[in-house]
Image (tube, rainbow, N blue to C red; front, side):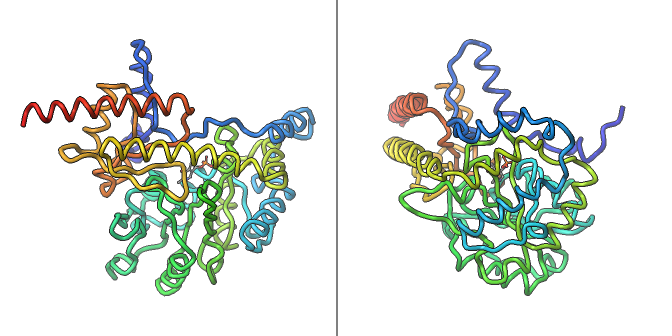
Length: 396
Ligand SMILES: *Cc1c(COP(=O)(O)O)cnc(C)c1O
């Protein structure tokens, strides 16, 4: 049979390769400690699970859901945005629940990108922005995120001929993989840029609730006129430790929400209703679990950054997100460092190059790892670095 070019040309999804490598090592009986994947290890809070159990028993929830989601879920999302960000949303026009944000992020490309169009995609970034663009027949134009510009894209550096064929701009703060944050000032500039160049904005914001030291990230929709030009993707995955349940949302510009609703109603049948009830419970219920989770992540963040710095790896304390973005020592590429670390001490980190060319020279460590494994992983890395230093002394 002939596999379609769009699939044949697709690189394997970043974590599929890493997961395979880990499984191979474990199958050989070797211990592997993974800082690779951003998937909360803390369980979904019990009050949310209880709502699922209850909803699962009701036969009403055994039948097809609607693609647009339960009206009450759309209302709960709008109420949460109002309470959390002071952003008003029309539940029936400006809110669409998703089967996880990833699904919506990939699919929205098909609503706004015609073959030959460009999408502005940050580099490094969550891989799905560029993959969706490519699948829709468009071309990603990469915006480098570097330490020098605080990991914010330089919108003034995009050539006019690129802007002329650009239909979408992707941004993501708090940022995966760099841990960088953006303020309202940046989002206001994005709105201005989008209006001037007639570009639709997709802000991906699954980490607005994962923040440290009392910092409270802002929503893109808090920027003046944001709803005129764009949408924000959000997710229950990271906020409420619900990655396994697959539920997220897109909110904002009604035309964009409508286009994605039209596409999705033709290709999926919505989120299992019992899971929609979990989301309603998460959004309307007590929010203190968020702070509890953040203090766990914050302690881990401090341990990881301190451990890396002690080893001589440069890393900043992120204000938000689940990630530490660290520089690899000179003499290594991001891939050679990650490979040696895995082969020699069984510790997995994600090579920055996997997120784009500007990720070269960095590795990403996720904070979604049990405390005991985290401490063990750091001590293995520290021991390894000692050896490397000794080795280097010997040869020089
Ligand atoms: C985790 C993550 C998502 C996906 O969230 P789901 O709702 O689980 O699909 C989207 N964007 C970024 C940047 C992420 O890190």
